[in-house]
Amino acid sequence: MTKGKEKQETGWNLDNSYARLPESFYTSLNPTPVCSPELIIFNDPLATSLGLNVQDLQSEDGIAVFAGNQIPEGASPLAQAYGGHQFGHFTMLGDGRAILLGEQITPLDERVDIQLKGPGRTPYSRGGDGRATLGPMLREYIISEAMHALGIPTTRSLAVVTTGESVIRETELPGAILTRVASSHLRVGTFQYVAKWGTVQELQVLADYTVKRHFSEIEADESRYLSLLREVIKRQAMLIAKWQLVGFIHGVMNTDNMTISGETIDYGPCAFMDTYDPATVFSSIDVQGRYAYGKQPQMAGWNLARFAETLLPLLHENQEHAVELAQDEISDFPKLYHSYWLAGMRAKLGIFNEEVEDESLIEDLLSMMQKYRADYTNTFRALTFERHEDTVLFGAPEFAQWHELWQARLGRQQEPETSSHQLMQNSNPALIPRNHRVEAALEAAVKQGDYSVMERLLDVLSSPYAYSPEQAEYSTLPARSTRPYRTFCGT
Image 1 (spheres, rainbow, N blue to C red):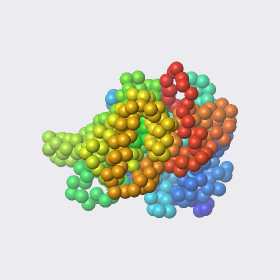
Image 2: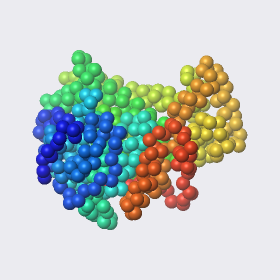
Image 3: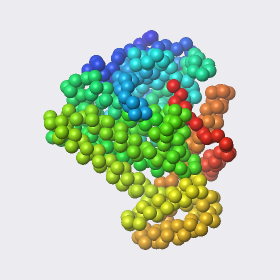
Image 4: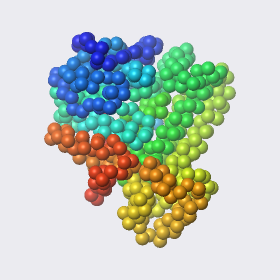
């Protein structure tokens, strides 16, 4: 392991505030070097926004950093400790295959984590090898960047390198490392870990750190820990509403996969819904449908309740009163989520103002979509451009009746038809990362070493609301299959 002799032009401007927290929160260690790293994909625009030198980072020295073979100047690598409820069961977890290099201070004075995913075993690996394979790392790159383009808070992907080494799973697979960028990697599970195995003083240190890093506007609040809970609830309500509005299914909403910052994290068995059905599940391990599309708001509320439990010692010295305070805040989540979701659905239908009947109008459409097995994204795409013949709803008597009510609703608002059309175009993506397109890109990359399929996919996904001609073929549905589509964690 070599310490990088970074030139000033490289752009690394790292700080290590997390490493200044109590040592029980993490373990300091370096990545495990790999034999022959090769850069597969690099995010030029993201690197530029971080203040990094695009050309330098694609050199041999830059690739060595992404591979964990070289430590950039100013870095203090560590693996974070955390716990979490996995499918409802609490366990000790931690960064088993991720190492935080440090926190990049950007030209806009923002602080973001730079983390390597798959750089080798850590004390939290729980018997695993700490490595990652190429397919899942490319999947995270594709989906996280698509989510960013859709306007959904998310971790970002800076680079993927292959390691030149094989990783044994069910078969022998090419090893890879993803460089992930996040506002932070603070999770509900981070608080659960400290609440379970730390002291109240350490919990307060973590809460104060979180407030300073993500919610500085509440630092002066007399009840800042209650304000912290309130702000996290608000961000999660907004995030989950955005997921639902585009048909995104996370697949594994464990508490260690819910960030305090309100960003989507960990793109394992995630996928986007084609046919509208609230019961849709893609994850191979979610056999009970705990994290089905329609249950995601409920599960977010459950996770937030676990977060609230960790804060009880800080909310009030009287336990009963602390519980009352937490319950009052948690009870607001369903209402907050619903208000964000309803506002988003109104926008998807070109509605600017509010009427009591709007919710029934929306629910009637969704019920029809479920009944006729309509594609979620393409139905709203067709409505946006009044191309009803492009949907399976066309010709259904109830759809004609619904359409008449919808048009009448639009006619009762002051905004002209052109404004409604623009609102719909801005709210309904022309395309999403269709599962069959993602799989085709991954198969070409992993099995054939052909990255052009993925590059074209990333290009069209970068402007999902453009409705450009080249996007049309990417909005087509997959061929019918007798077997349901399944995704895997990719660990």
